[in-house]
Length: 178
Image 1 (cartoon, rainbow, N blue to C red):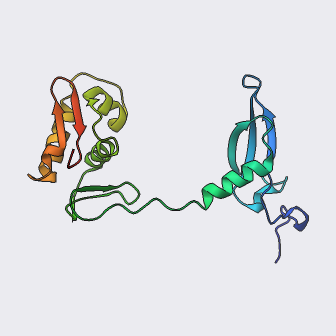
Image 2 (cartoon, one colour):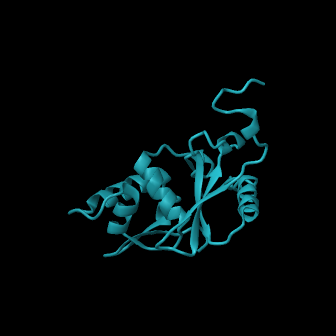
Image 3 (cartoon, helix red, strand yellow):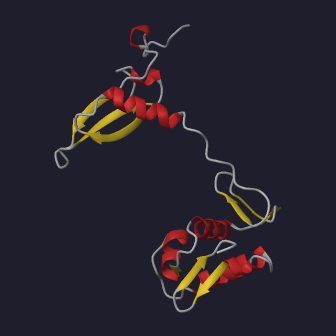
């Protein structure tokens, strides 16, 4: 295997190594550590490519390696339940009602996913605008009401009551059977 001149064999390692870059003066209990994305990134002549990790001062590289390897090999999230009810899969960005796919706009999906992720929690219109739309409260919050109405219509008669209006406050999601 021929290596480019900027990556000679003597720098190639099979396991990634970490370099402690510096201790932060304002946060003496933390150390910034570079964790390369690949073994090739450990070459000192290659620009620093990888992840910067804030770790407690004194953390040994092998401890970080164990944690990082464990997170990389962690089991994938469980598949969403199929069947009856509202199902939201944020990985595939799909939503279904009783197994039937919903055709949602970007903001409708984000709104539904956020509410389903936090059942029974009441969100004000201002909180929803800040979280879903990404900007602070500006004037009329009617846009939230319009999106909720469209979302309820798409959920259908059997599930529209899952998004509950809390008068003079905002909205919440209540799962079936609660």
